[in-house]
Every structure is written in C-alpha cells, then in structure tokens.
Image (tube, one colour):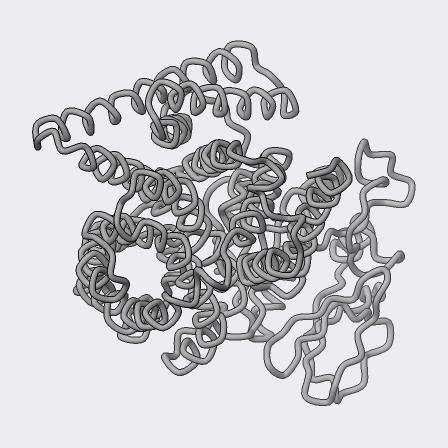
Length: 588
C-alpha cells in the first residue's frame, strides 16, 4: 500500500472515530451504536481503512495493547469503598450469577446455533458475559431511571469489564492449551503458568506506578504519560514472555492501584480519559472494518436467535435469581432484567483472541468475531429503542420534577431552599462549615452527605438525582472553580451567584458559566437585602408581581425549575409559580 493510501486510511479512521463519538454525545446514545456500523460500512465501501492492509500482522499486537489500556482504565474506576449497603449485595449477586448463567447458557447453545466446537462456544460465552459503563451509562442518561436502579446498573457494568477481561484471558489460555493434546495435567499447568505471569506483571506494574505516582509525585501530564508507558511496557513484556498474559497484568494493575491505600490518584483524569476514548473509537472502527458481509451472512440468523435468547431468557433469569429478597420493587427487578447491552470489552477481547484461535485451527473460531459483532449491535440497538418505554411501563422513571442542589449555608441561602421547597421541589443542600450544616438541618432541609467536590470530580460518579446545581457560598473563587469541576457530573446545568463587581478574586472574574439573577443581584447585594428584611415570595404567575420584587426562579407546572440568569430571562405561563425576592421593608 502506498504512503498516500496509508495516510488516507489513518485519516479516515480517526475522522470516523471522532465524528461518531461527538455525534453520539450530542444524541445521548452509546457511541458503539454509531462506531460499529460506521466502521463496517467504511470497510465495505473502501479499501483504504482495513487495518490488516494498513498495519499488517502488527494490528493484532496493537489491538492487544489497546485492550490492555482500556482494561487498566476500567480497573481504575473500581473504588469499592463507594459500593456500600444494599447495592453491594445486589451487584455482587448480579456479577456472580450473571457470569455463571451467561457463560453456561451461551456455551450450551452456541455449538448448535453456529456449528462450532465446545471450545469456541466457551470462548463466545465468556466474551458475552461483559456489558460495560460506556454502553450502559448513555442509555441510563436517556431513560432516567430511579437512583437505586442507576447505582446498581452502573456498578454492575463498571465491575464486569475488568472481571470479564480476566476471565476472557484465562479461558483463552485454557482453550489454547487444550489444542495441544498433552493431557489434562499439562493443560492445567499451562493455565496456572499464564495466571502467574499475569499476576507477576501486575505486581511489576503496581511497583512502577508507585515509583512514578507516589514517590516522584508526577503531575497530571507526566503522570498520564507514566501510566500509559507502564501499562504498555508491562502488557507487552508479559505478552512477549507468554502470549496474551498482558491483559491479565493490565487489569490487575488497574485494580490494585484503585484498591491499595497510598496511591494518590486524581479523581478526574481528563487527559487519560480522552486518550482512552480515542483508543476506543479507533479500535471499534478498525475492528468493525475487518468484519465483512461474507463473514456475517452465515451467522446472521443464528446471531439474532442468540440475541433473543440473551434478552428474553438469560438476562431475566439472572435478574430473577439475583434480586430476590433484595427490597427492590417488581418494576425495578423487571428493568434490571431488561438492561444488558454488550460493549467495548466484548468486541476487544473477541478481536484479540479470535485470530490466534483461528490460526490454531480451532473449529468455529472464525465465527467468534462476527457473532460478537452482531450481538453487540443487536443488544445495543434493541435496548436503545426499548429501554425508555419499558422503564415507563414498569414505573421506574424518575419524575421530571427538578431536584436542585443548593451549595452554601448562609441565612439567605437556607431561606431560599425553604422557598423552593414550598414551591413543590425536592431540595438538597450542602455546606462545608459545621454551623451552616446545622442551620440546614434545623430548617428541615435535606443535607447532602460527604465531601461535595470529592464526589463531583469522580469521573464515574454522579450527583445522583440532582438535576441542577446552584453555587451560593460566600467564597466567589470556590463558586467559580466548583462550577467548572462539577459540570458534567450532574444531569442539568450548574449556576453560580455573581461575585461583587469590584471583587478581584483569583478566579471568579475570569471564569465562564451561567451567572444567576442578573448584574444587579450579585452575592453581597442579595445577602445585604436579606439582612435588611427582604424575603422570598412564592406565588402563581397569574398574579401580578408586587412592586419592588425581583423574579429569581420560575417553577413550571410539571415541576421543572428555570432560574433567571445574567443572559436569560424566563417567560412564565399562567400555571407556573414564581419565586420572588421581595422589597426591603421601609423603616417605621
């Protein structure tokens, strides 16, 4: 292939990966829903995007290293200290039952459906046990189920990725060693050796990351470079010594770094997260371009039958066995039984293992990748189209009413929380100062637990149930910084009260974002007017606004909250409620 065609192929792959992920983000759908068809169509219509032509035999090695980085990142997301209470038990049962039932069920039906050997069927079964937060998350954002359901499904998807990666590598080595007819003891010995190499690689990876992240205290940019280098070096080194043990090493490294005390891992790693997302996009476009229509045609109808079997039999059975006596409602149990799309790790491990098994002559190994491709597309498409109506039918959709979080504990902020609650909203408040927290409790308002920024900056955490954040503390720089770091971890917008015009804070005057209430009602003016006797009024929009009052919020008839901002006024309808700041009483 000429240099120009190579450049064109690389450019097309990167362009498709980026555009699909951007469009998916705007449409709030899983990126896989666009990446896989885009890569397949590009591979069918052009001859410049095929990775085997662009990279040759090296493509398989690059896939293996890419999967190692993805699994390391998945392991980093497992802060098990946040998995507590009833959720821990439900998620644990879903993982154990889901892995066993899915593996055994798929392994039992795959030989009959696809005419493959039991070893190939076992490989398909372990590949399809995984789901993944990159698929589940966008679907849940669209469906908006109850907080309990969201916690359970996100944790299940987050944990199953590294578990599935390790199990996939172990089953691959068991299947691969079984091709050599040297006896059961030899096979078990090879299996144990592979596991030992993977664990040893994980230990080396943890030691190197301890040196770079803990001892040398590298910043975000150098720390990201160090993490990427360590994962690739350890994974590649293990693969050189023993094929495909690098995936085990990378997963173990991520799990250890997330679990062991002493690692000072930043809650948000935008550089590394961006890199992983780019790898995912490039990997999916490249993998799907290798899937041809000729390879799909023989397995199309059996794969559709497998999708139906997984959706209507396997997943409901897993949910039924795992959620009994869990305290979940019938609707919540039903929705868990209707949410198990396959994602990134399934496609990646299928691509990483299928080629080797095919080269070894394993019967049916050539069907592993096209079957996995069709199951991913089928499950993601089916759940994307049906999850929302199913959730509504089961009564597990969170109400459309806004649930604002007010950050701050000044007297005027607490009274504002009371006013919003009297308008029918479920108000949540948070303050760092203990006296302010006591003031919030004394007012009968719900106090958010924990450290706000520690939760808000966790890239896999969400401020659960919160639809809008209002930053109203008396520290303008805190409000400005928090408006940046909290954005993206809440379903709706983040607003901050305006700093004084003459203020010269370090950050506040130079930070963008929506500013509340307009130029006249800056923070110190609001506090001073409240101190002098101004109070909040809640009244129907059909009534005239009292003289001297300022409109702060409009609460729609369906419970949605719209604040007046520096750049936007809100036009109320007759059935809306207005939250006003009344005039300061005249002396005497």
